[in-house]
Length: 257
Image (cartoon, rainbow, N blue to C red; front, side, top):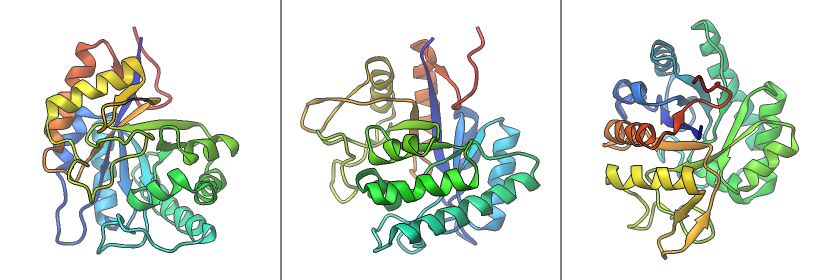
């Protein structure tokens, strides 16, 4: 049976500001990547998001980002590999403690935003992230863009990896994501996104904005929790996977026939 993880970035509210509708998304996903306070989130939001995920039996992971609340972690900063190593260790540790206090444990790590995109292309930053994950807990799964330096670095450091593709983002011919600064970056139609997800899993391809068929490996499908239509996307994609006979399972979970 074909299988894929369906993950969502969440826990991105902060203080008095609510971002996303995590409670409406969680029933439809298998993994939650939870912000750790640098680009979004705070201690209370981290705890409440972990508790919600546990209640829905959703696997949880750390979603470390650059220290940029104002830019939501989506602006590139001039950080060194040592900076990246230290900030990733710090953020994993924060969510790890929160999870432990809630009677659960982390299963994965997925960098956020600009940090994710920088590490997809820069092997030195990818190595720093992989070293940080391996140093904290080598059983954690490292999520990274399919075909990226982050996946290669994770494997080189002995980590299990999950090649990630995006339901709500368009692709360029080289397999990278269309930058958010471009008008065609986002996919806003849930039915179109669901159709693309099935293509990604079944055929290991995605159609770029130029019409090219790009080879990808789809082990985890990402939905962005801060998008207005995230609950509808999650529900539509989960239904499409079921209709196509594709099991939605977190990395490491077993398929039960």
